[in-house]
Amino acid sequence: MAESDPRFQRFADFLARSGLKTTRQRERIVHAFFAAGRHLSAEELYNRIQTQDPGIGLVTVYRTLKLLRQAGLATERQFGEAYTRFDPNPADWPHDHLICKRCGKIQEFEDAGLHSLREKIARSLGFTVTEHKLELYGFCRDCARLGKGRAARTA
Amino acid sequence: MAESDPRFQRFADFLARSGLKTTRQRERIVHAFFAAGRHLSAEELYNRIQTQDPGIGLVTVYRTLKLLRQAGLATERQFGEAYTRFDPNPADWPHDHLICKRCGKIQEFEDAGLHSLREKIARSLGFTVTEHKLELYGFCRDCARLGKGRAARTA
DNA sequence: GTGGAAATTGACAGTCATTTTCAATTAGGA
DNA sequence: TCCTAATTGAAAATGACTGTCAATTTCCAC
Ligand SMILES: [Mn+2]
Ligand SMILES: [Mn+2]
Ligand SMILES: [Zn+2]
Ligand SMILES: [Zn+2]
Image 1 (cartoon, protein in one colour):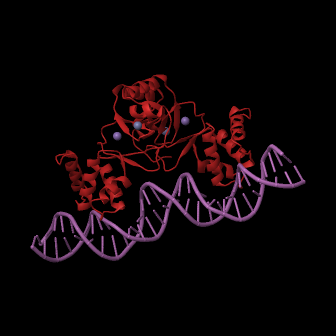
Image 2 (image 1 turned 180 degrees about the vertical axis):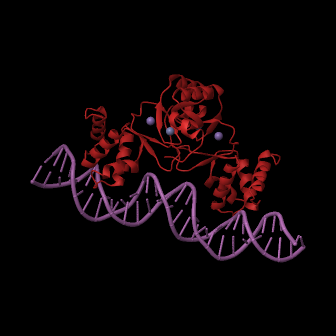
């Protein structure tokens, strides 16, 4: 998360390349997004920024997240909630997610064997895969111990 | 899709068991849903019914689909669109989907090896999995031939 | 078969995340 | 510094879905 994070430069380059401008709002939003380092919703990110810069609107947060997506610096994710979450990992890191239904923890993982098996299955069905989405829902170690399989509301 | 489809009986049983009533609207909606045999949205199903029975409201379609879900005869799916699609397969058939980004075709598949590998990975990370969702996006055989990798709008 | 309580229906209004509109402000190259 | 295109935020619009409610229908007890 240091200022040396290459993602800031990538975003600046993206803006320049696209004929867009660097603004105080965009800098704050992007910084807060990378600093959080979690899968945040637009509103969650907005709330974090509000505490330090009440002058930034939710609409601008939405617009900046869209730019980050276009720059390949964020990915939209749907984890079965009413709203969209944004993944702060570079779009070229294809990974999957484990979501705890009790505490809401989201664990990321990458598995080459899983990836190649998926490709093989798709190819055998005549499909050329460009994107994939795998989400496993259940209970993390801590919650499985407590809940003993009981489904609980999201924390 | 014949009238002997055991799903009609399962739904009737569900209604009886729950103290609910069999109505003309529910019969039409359920029949149209099973007859379509595709992953329809509530509105698509509503439109199909409209052509033959304009007296059925979209609200009732939503409510009946909810009952089908409770009966284990439909599953809600999010394929990256703005709306929910409903899967007419029994809820106890865990399967995955390949979605063509050009023609919209949705191909279902089931792979035991993929399933067990996912379980193994989740377990190694301390997770107990209760549900999973895998979607592979790309191009079907026909569309890959035509589009040559060009992403196009959904047909 | 009827009566009547409980379930159902559909029009309409409400909700909620996200997008569009638009007048005022700002960035940044000439 | 000037000027114009980009940007912003408030408010209104959107679109999928859910809640409300008076009128209607189902179906079981009689
Ligand atoms: Mn992630
Ligand atoms: Mn399916
Ligand atoms: Zn947990
Ligand atoms: Zn296709």
